[in-house]
Length: 397
Image 1 (cartoon, rainbow, N blue to C red):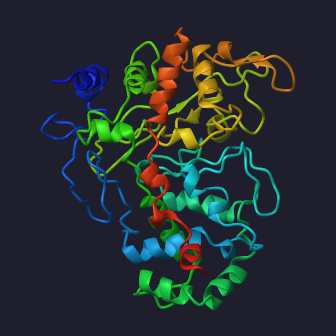
Image 2 (cartoon, helix red, strand yellow; image 1 turned 30 degrees about the vertical axis):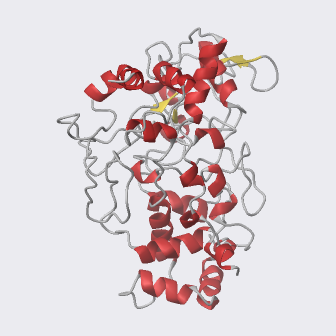
Image 3 (cartoon, rainbow, N blue to C red; image 1 turned 30 degrees about the horizontal axis):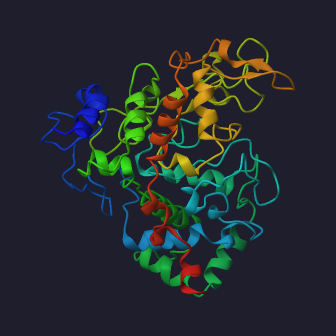
């Protein structure tokens, strides 16, 4: 066994034993996630990276090449917004892992949203969507929010349904695309069909060819540098405890797949705010509390995947931390202290903060190593995949 293999097994041994990270079935007997055999399940369309389980697909919206093609066109098309000024891609750019590079976006009518645009990375594996709404448990339900939501308005479909459908019917491509995707429909151009197509396209966006993946699942012992290996050991250590919220093959425990024996929904308070000294987060942006009204849910947000995290800055639910180095320092201190202004408070003492955000002490070199490992989760083949770009731009239209 080489030194790199020893380092790898040292850092991941307990996770593999706990069935939290999928490995080839010959290596980990009995783990539900350890498919690694290319098995396909009903409804899924497309290839998967080595070591990845098959995603769950709703029975009423099985994936097809035609639905994915339709969804891809719609995703980049401003005609899908009420005033024709924005598309899904306005807030989800392929080169940024389908994030947008700003703290919080604006909708098509100029209203500012409260939360950062999440990266659309491996959403097929999500057990819940958005930052803090457990009821949005499928892509189909989630996609309806930016389309029809009014508080705030995003794409602004509500009240403009017929106008949008007329645009699609008049387009030279969409009658054929909808008919191919839904061949049994009498009138295939509907907003429900558009949602199914969009969900199929977004579901197809699977990222699993980062240096970490090549090292872990593809047998490339040279894929990670010495610094990245040290950072990986830190990431999976009990000192740093990153893996308690960002574990599993997708670096998020809010994950499910076709072989899952249970569905995990995990939300965490990281001590980002404490505006009243008693744990409060900014009004109308208090995480799960906004849905449940339970004080114990104050400030609890879903831990997103860390895949491609290098390109999805700024970070946190409100985009209030700018760099990966700042994120690591935030966790080092066990929360954030805001000295002045309307959000002043000591997040380190937030009574609702997760026990895993207790702070730690590391050296400058260890911090650099940890950041290097996080950057090793960048999958450039995903970011540059032509199948995820605007088809009209590619065709010169």
